[in-house]
Image 1 (cartoon, rainbow, N blue to C red):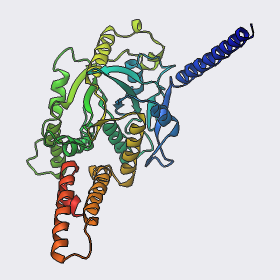
Image 2: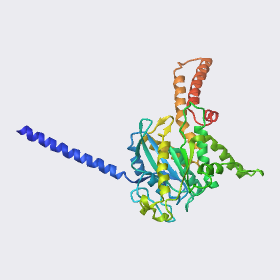
Image 3: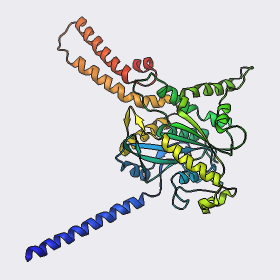
Image 4: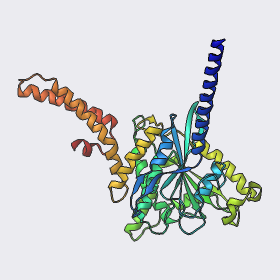
Length: 390
């Protein structure tokens, strides 16, 4: 009978261990069901820094990642919109602020990714909340960096705008346009650093009468007459011309206000909201889901650890310059490629057995350089001649 008691003791111990493990797993999952900062401003609100807590939540993800970011002016309802997309109440989801000071600082992520199927593969979708533009005590450069970071990280970029599209809203697209020209508008069939996010213009306005939301966006992006040759208008029109690069990469969508009493939205159930808003919100969920693709960097999907590494690289590049620029991003991506080219060249040259004639050495050098250049031509991003000459 001793073996039975022993077996029962082992079974009981195993059951306890299993129960504890399950409890820990449930606890970990519960701890992730909230918003975490992943990027925060420094004291002077001029640069951005990584937030360890949020990054740890992302690093747990082993499947390919896609990110949906909502950007726009402060106090425009970005956090509330994200909660609506995630079917979360204000008490459980992203913090919603009604005070003058902006609630969200930097960039925050919902800790529990939404798992979806994309073309037969499991994808973990992160929802990102961003600090609003034009809030008190910030520089334009800081706002541009938030926009740039969201544009680079995201698979879908929701541009949340109240009522109409201002000139400043279009100007903020300049960085995203540069990304599109540099990395997306290339010869098909070649590897690219990353594809820019699909842009979703979300206009908070009722378009039941008059022009459609797509007409409004199209008209806002038309060239501005410039018979006097104004330099500023030239720059504005250059942005408009460049937007053509994005082509079908952008979509327009409208939503009415959920309720006249905006400060009480968090206390309302669906049946208390405008029925048209609820209908459009549900349509928006379907639209966003249809636009989601896993984030690709150099032709590869990213898991949690790789996504965090990519975020760190981009953040470092943005913080280096006075303003965001594709040049700094090109530097990040091309650095590794140049190192591989140099390694290839060095390996070829080290195979030469000395002593050797000058002509033979020159011949080996030319062949090694040619192979290294071909590798660079195949993988580089940006201006080829400038980079390889460096």
